[in-house]
Amino acid sequence: MKLFSKIYTYLLLGIIGMLIIDGNVNYEAELKQFDIDMADNARQIGWIVSGMISHTWQESGPEKAIQLIDDANRADHLITIRWVWLDELKTVHGQVIPELQTHLNNEISSPFSFTALNEHRQEQRYTFMAVDIPGDRPGAIQLTQSLVPREKFIQRMLIRSLSITTLLALISGIIIYFFIHIKIRGPLEKLSSKAVEIGKGNLMPDLEIKGEDELVGLAGIMNDMCTRLLIAKEKIHFEHLARLKTLEQLRHTEKLSTVGQIAAGIAHEIGTPLNVVDGRAKMIISEPLEPDEIISCARIIKTQAERMTLIIRQLLDYSRKKKSHPKTLENVETVLRQVFRLLSPMASKQGITLTLHTVAEIQMVCRMDAQQMQQVFMNVIMNAIQATPNGKEVVVEIVNTTLKSMLHTDDQMKKLVRIDVLDEGDGIPEDQLPEIFTPFYTTKQIGLGTGLGLSIARELLEEHNGWIEVENRRPKGARFSIFLLLEETEQ
Image 1 (cartoon, rainbow, N blue to C red):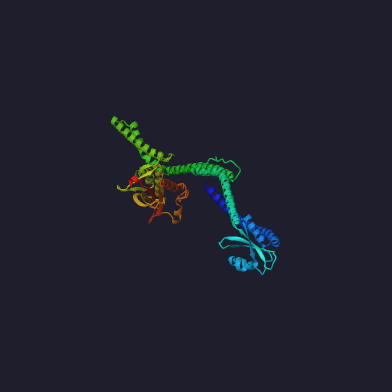
Image 2: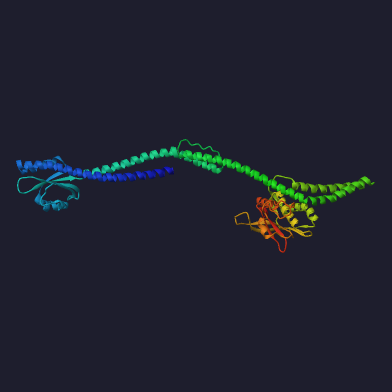
């Protein structure tokens, strides 16, 4: 109800402000009019009483006239009438009522009225009116009015103003409360709940608010937004699936390209056991052999066949398109040796030696998808083989290191395994180093690469919270460094 409190507070302050201004204006006007009415009333009574006194004074004498004044005082308790001699006003009454001095002239030609404090410090209205009587000494009547009616009038005005303010505040509060509770609070709660649901992923356009005000329009806008978000979400989902499918296809394409490049070496590797099988088979067919010799030839044929089967199975396993496996604990050295077995024939054919350097005490167990990591090592080591001249060496080193992760911003030192692939080629031109991991960027001759090997390797490493770096060696060659997080249990 915060909205109700704010609206009601501002409205109440506005009502009170307007009533204060209006009450102040009316108070001044009505109080002034009340004083005028009191003065007029006193003059009218004075005219009547003065006429009666003058007539009685002339007909019956001063005693009867003064008696008439006393009778008038007993009839009206709000106005007190006194007889005064004009020659005593300044000397006697002027001492009691200082305000009288400003109204006195040599003679009173017309009635005058004013308010002043009496001897008891009470505010009263005084009205003086001359009376025509026989004789040389002029006289007048003094009408004294109590201002208690004016004070009561002021109290009634204040009570009236407070009553109107309270009534308006109460009626306004009731109207605003029911208006906000029915017309605003309910729709706002629905809008807020829908916003929370959208934040949690519920994008169904099911918000319904009845009416014809702005909140209904806002609900329609929110429903339209949900509809557009649903469409965008589906579109992103399909684009994501298409991207994953494309990436998987590119990875498989790179695998097939690699298979094509090592096919010649594999053929040479299979050629030797095939020759042995052929020779032993010919001996069995063409030569009279003893049973033991035939069994020996059969065993040799079986051994060579198993050797060829293993080579072909390794090649097929690598080239076959498979789904990614859940990351499990794997030994980096084991995966590297599997890659060495596939690439050794290709390296031997080019006269290049593959060497793996490691020590027994280092930690090499990481959480990985072995097939994906095999592809990473295959791409990087094959590039090193292709860049190394005939008769040289490609060295792979495994070491432990501790440093901050390139992919995380937690600034924590992490223990890693680093795989360095070192070749003895010409290195990479400095201007090409920033582009070396860009997809389809290659410095090889046509037919020797797709330009996807290193970009796919970097992508697969990022999926494993790892990364790859490259630098030129001195005096010649390049160094590719692959970083993988060690499993915590190993640390």
